[in-house]
Length: 209
Length: 379
Image (cartoon, rainbow over all chains, first blue to last red; front, side, top):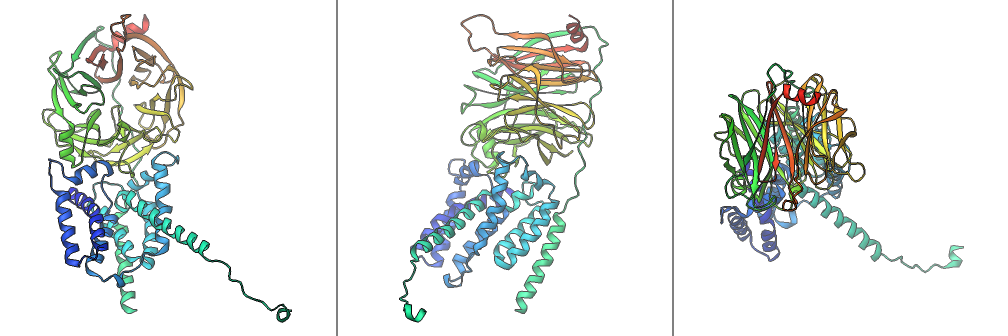
């Protein structure tokens, strides 16, 4: 069951690109659903003993529960909610994710002497931090808050393959998404700064005096 | 507004419940289970033999060894046309009635891939451990893509001393795509029925780590042994319930070609910074065991090419002296690359078994006892 969820998560991830392409081409919701299901079937079917998902899993491992829930939310939003009603992603989400994940991966690769990942096996302090993250996320990005909450519940119930809380809540794909969000913001800020020229206002010196 | 408040209250309630359910009490400090001292009651005994590679396999390497009831041994190693070839598989050989039986195929990368639902291209180093309940655990590395440094760990178990094995399952030990956890040395038992398995990271930097497993064989804790880089393949040798040495392969041998070691006084939770021993080490793993309160034994390669393998003893685990040269490459230009490497000890009762890679054509097996070792020390 746990393996199936892992495979499904990667299948949904792989289906992201075709579904997005179909969306750009103006496909109807029923066509989007068909693209999603067909892509999932193609990715999960063991064509040569190995399915496409097996090959991807061989390099990236499993996605976190958080990513799985967020993927389901994204697909649900694309399929069932009109574009105008989509809730925008809060500007701080990318920064918060990066603030958590950059130290984690720097630590995991030996660039920090402390091993943050090991905290996830005995996550007393992490759970306190998670409480704060949940509070913040519920105010700013409820979908992320619910995804994290489901991740914590999965960890608590032993539904995750790993006994480490980090693996339930975060993965490198969230880091990639965070880099994308932050990069997007930085680009927009740069574009605005360059695009806004100072407006010359004629000033009557005598009036000013 | 009212529904938002109600939603918020529900979410807060669910969060508190989830966080409470995820709360775990802090695990107690691990305590090493010490084996009883090896005695020297019997007359000196020494024998050696070679467990040859399986038929049709060009090279074998990376053995792990475990002692079984009835004076049996089980050895697992990997073999194929070369160390990193795609035809490399794991083989097991059993030592019974004073001889090594014909090795048999244990598992290959394709079977590992199908069982773990991941593309797997290669298998490599293994580590065998027999737990307090008599269950065998086999840990081994496998790689999907790229080189050995992108390896992950797999675990198999056997309840009939290696006659049959469970399907392998993938251990998750790293947050970054779960890559770069490798192993080489055997696990050490803990008083709570669990065990501590030394592993290492080597993708971007190289440093030793240890994984704690509970009595059910579940991974429950991970410890980084040092933040410094350049040591790996720690061999952990407990000296008391809370103290242990770790002898480590020195990758930075150009700076100082000496063996590195660390010490713990809290069951492996924290370790001293790597220090240097007066034992030559030029990037080769060592095997070490504690035989009694004042006798430690080590097998090591003093040279880079691993063409010599020696035995050394120590009274305190720090000051070592050579007692015997076990193997040396003959001065024969026909065999320029002969190596004797990757030693592994098993101690059971009075008997000490040592196996290591012999020319990559097989595994050399030494069996001796304390009396023989004491004779060598006197000589």
